[in-house]
Length: 283
Image (cartoon, rainbow, N blue to C red):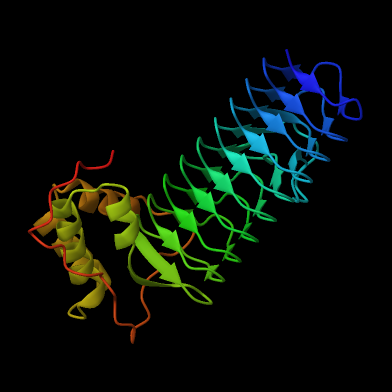
């Protein structure tokens, strides 16, 4: 049975699973579905066709499922879906989808910190961390395990690959390759997310091959980018991390690829020592 505070407003039609807790002055719309054990804090507003998974926690003054900030939107029945155990902190805003894909989706086990904005039609994978005051434009796609630093602003339609990292206060206008690290105003590729890969248990052998691929593509200056990319794909293809980067680049998107500035020295992290015990590769 759900526990609803006396001052909260839950519209008829809303579906609250077993163990849901609704805090003071929260407002839950008629088409909202909240999974088992979820906790909704004081003054939270959840509206529209919105589904929260089991164990989701929403902190005070967050708003989820309100109409998108899109002049093309005309009240279509678009949605928000949030996966299990995701944490949504104070004053976060997550807007429902707009015309087109029609859905804003956040995966399981994510953490969305205070005052972040997730715009319409964004898709976040599992285990994504979005720090304070981050702003996503519409249709941004973020892969599993990525980290977005505080105050970053991400342009609409940008793709951010799996286990990539975006430095705080960065302005991201281009696609960020999987496992890459970008930072700066008009963010540029500055290295690999080596620390993140090690923490996630990627095998040292895979990291070493990935480092070599990045060196060949982004650090060397011989030939064009397309030539270096093709040669590296032929030489190191078959390694699953390199293949993931190759597939990401070849798939393309609506934004250009985020690359290093010509004068930038790419930091590929410390050498992966052969003496280290091999770790199980992350999925």
